[in-house]
Length: 285
Image 1: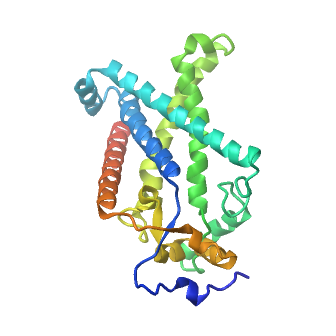
Image 2: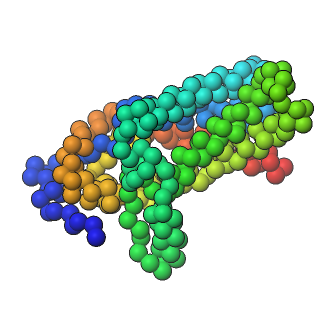
């Protein structure tokens, strides 16, 4: 049974709202690179995929033609690949070299476990009024799904993209049919990724009722104590039980930074939803 939260741990004598660190500066920077390059890949890849569409031709003409779009697409791919490899290196360093606990398993890990399966079932029952809302830990099941979807995309979409880019090199050890297949794989998997991120991910992360209109934590790195207790009750109770909650205390984000983050976030969502509408229009036309 989870240890109950002690009242003295949640009281702030000064009357000011407490904030706790959730994401480090490095993690937020990695996410910024991720969503920036993904938007760039989507904005340049979709016009190539639907090159006969009116909006694709207009966009290509605005940036100097499809050759320029392809160059920008490859540039975003290289930057994203470097960021991904740096992330994998950091995970391996923490988990394999420094033997840091919780990297590959446990409540602080991004690896799915049995609790995630139970949370998924419990969430479905809660949606239809057949049970209470599950108590989530540091990472909910849908966040882990999003995380591993990036890994899947980097392997499948990334490899197929580089195979097309450096086709003469890959032709030394791949049969001709495989080089033809990577074109289909790259196009369809990338389209699936765009549809997922700009619909499911946006809704789960920013447009659900307890985060609408935007979840700011990935930008500011901190969340209020009330948010912490509401969204991550198991982590909150565990930190209090271990006596380590105060180690996560952080300063409230300055207003100018919150405003800047909102502008960036809303711009990204607007671009993503616009690309989603254009994609659906081109796909079904």
